[in-house]
Image (cartoon, rainbow over all chains, first blue to last red; front, side):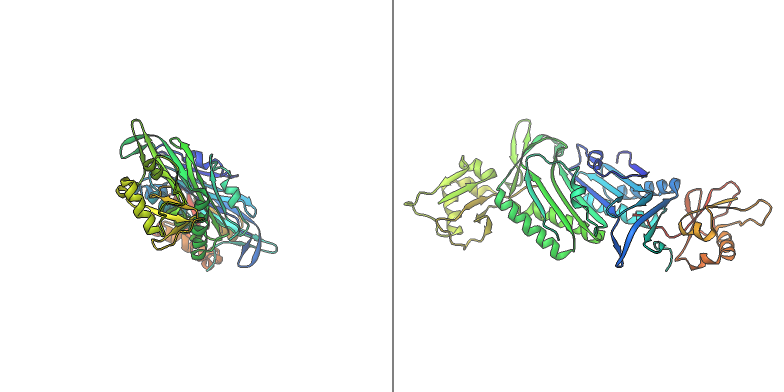
Length: 139
Length: 139
Length: 80
Length: 80
C-alpha cells in the first residue's frame, strides 16, 4: 500500500478521485461516495451538519486502512470526509481503493466505509424544517 | 430504476460519473473502474485492444442491469465500456450504481461488472512486445 | 446467409464476415452451423468454447436459422 | 484537566470544553470520569452510549487519566 490519502475537508470534490487512485499495477478501482439524501423516515431533510474530532478521526482512518490492507492487498487508498453544513445530493464522504484485481478493491472499500461509520469520530446532525437531531445519539 | 446509461465509447472519461449517478434519494454511490494493468503474469503489456459486437453488447448490458435491479433496489446506473487500443492506466470500463443505502449499490455494482465480464460480447487482445493474445480464447 | 465474426474468430477465418451463398448447403440450426465452422476452420475446435448469436441474442444449439437472421460467432468474451 | 466535547455532548453541557480545576476532585480513571459526567449532566445517561478518548485514542474504563492528557467525550459516532 502506498501512503494513504486521509483528509477531513470543507468541500468534497469527487471528480479527481479516479486520478488519485490510478496506478500501473491496479486493474480495479472501487469508489464509494456517500451523499445527503432528501428524506429520512419520510421526513424532508433540509441539510446535514458534520462535526469531527480531527486528530482522532485521522488516526482512526489510518487504523482502518491499515486493517483493510492486512486483509486485502491493494495499491492506493483515499478516504476523505467533509465537515460543515451539506445539502441534498452533496457528497459527504468518499472512499476509494485501487488493487490488481476487483476481488480486493470491492471488499476493502466496503470494509473501510463500514468501519469508518462505526469508529471514526465524526458526528452528523440532521436538520429538518422544525427540529435538529444528532444521528444515533439516542436509543 | 431510472433509464440506465449504457454505452460503448472510444474514450472513457470517468470524472463525470459521479454527477450522472447523483440523485436526491441516493445516499450511496458505488463505482467500479477497470483499468489497463502494466503486467500480466509478469509479462509487460504494451496495450490492450478491445473489440465489440455493439448491438448485442448493449442488449446484454441492458439485461444485466435489469437483473441487478430485480435483486437490489437502486435509482441510477451507468455502464460504459471502451473499444480500441488502450494503454497502461487507461480506464476501460466504468460501472456505477446509486441507491438509498450502500447495502444495495455495492453488490449491484459487483454483480454488473462480474456479469459483464461473463456475457457481454467484448473481446480483449493483450499486446505484448513480441506477441498478441486474445484473452480467454484458449483453454 | 452472412456470419459476423469477432475477436479470435475473425483471426481464424481471416476476415470479419463469411457469406454462405444461397445455393450452397445452408446450416439449418445453430448446431449445424457450429459443425460446419469446425469442419471448414479446424482452429475453432481449439478454442475454450464459442457461442452463436442469432439477431444479437445468445442462441442454443437447437435454434433454427433463417435466411434473414443476423448471425454472429461469439468466441470467449473478455471485456472489463 | 480539560475535556473536549463533541456532537450531542457539547449540546448537553452547553459548551465545547469543560475545565476541571486542579484543586477539585479530579477523576483518576475513565470509569470515574464517566460517573462524574453522568452525575453532573444526567442527560448523558440517556445516550445510546458514550466513549472516552485519551490522547485521541479510544480508552477503556480502567485507563488512568493524567493531568496532561487530552481527554475527549465521544458520543455515538455517525459519519458517512
